[in-house]
Length: 357
Image (tube, rainbow, N blue to C red; front, side):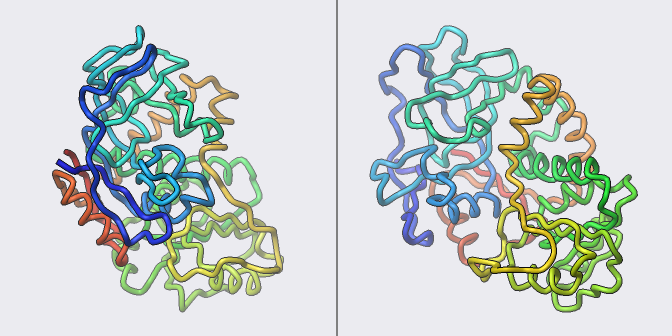
């Protein structure tokens, strides 16, 4: 049965199902076969597809015709169903960056009780943050609970949490303006700043104002077409989740020297321009969580860093779970339909979609 989702790299709305890797695939020494158990589909995955060529996301899970097609990366759980590796046993569960497909062959290295890294040859040149598979039996994030929401929020929360840590360490910013405030990465940032002295202002569309206000993590919510720049004060940081360059220019030009930092995360705005051009105020920087997380883990030690993240995760997931509406699907046809629906337009910010084979 065809189950694996592949996407035309030149036309992301052209997607189809292909046959999976066989369960009886011959493994070489040091390899394991992972069967994908359950994963999330979010706008974050759509960002992976849109940046597939530019950011190299198509390289993680090559399709049979890699010059034409790509496999969609997702976050989720898998089981080891065959092993030719002495330190990774059949039957254990992992969590990490997986393909939207039935099975995948990995080459574990750097094996610890907490995790291992996939060092398959095709991954050379890709970012190591995505290679790490967490062994859920020893993973404090998994043990903290909220199993269902973890594939939806894990990577998004790490982004928002570290962005908050970065702003806190800077010590200059008084007001944080967050675009696409109804998005789950924006929730993560705003919630991580909720007990700080920072004032957090969320910008969103008129249709999402009521929901965004109901989250309770923003000091104020404004719509994109009614931003009160005078009310933002001084020492403002713009954290742009939307990637709407027109909006960014309006804020840069309107705040001038009152804007002390401008950060771009992701890009949820489909109509955004490709280039901001020259803007007054600070240069726009790109906050890339794989670089940040790897650097922080190297400084603190990976296990200690992950413990700290797990503690923050438990608090966030407790708060976030009531704001999510989980929908489940099974099989390749439902996965394909969900992907195409997300490509066609915006999604409910409360929706958490989980799929399994």
